[in-house]
Length: 256
Image (cartoon, rainbow, N blue to C red):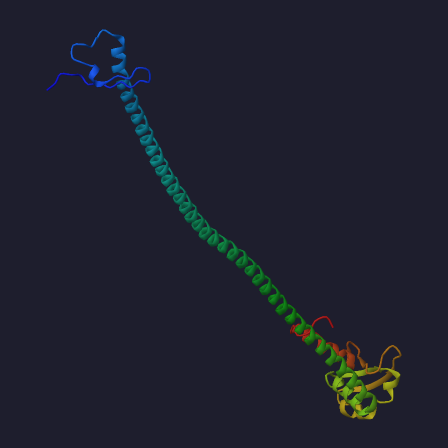
């Protein structure tokens, strides 16, 4: 093999030919020689450095993009997880809120219902009591009216029928024992109604003498019988009052 060093140096000033470089003719002490050798090496190193830099940048960009994608995925998952938590929390809160709201509304209306029911029961009891009192009041008024009507009817009968008035006197004298003399006092209107002979025929065995006196202080239907030691009120008004007293004692009639 030939020991000729083949080196190509292209310049515009003095172009060299391959044949000009022969073995034993190169001066390695020449600075240009090393410069000419370093230039290609430097270019190679620069290219390699450039390639390494470009590769490093590409790798860095790739890592950054990957990290960004991972970060975005993590952020997206975190947002989804947050949304899920918020949704569950909302549903739970809504459910609990609805339940609590239902309980509050239910409790509110139950309390209102209980109050209304109490008022209804109280009102019902008041109506029952009022009805009972009104019923008693009506009973009392009916009794009073009945007694008043009875008194009027009896007085009317006594006015129209003299015999009825004499019968009242006879009934009163029959309850009197032996007496030497009695006095029958009546009003002027009733004086003419008394059948004295008839009365004497029934009491002559016990009473010796019967006197009839007109008393201006008495009213129609009043009959007062006086004896030596007694006094009998046999009038219609007194009889009605006696009936009223009995009804009061029986707690049937009040405040007449």
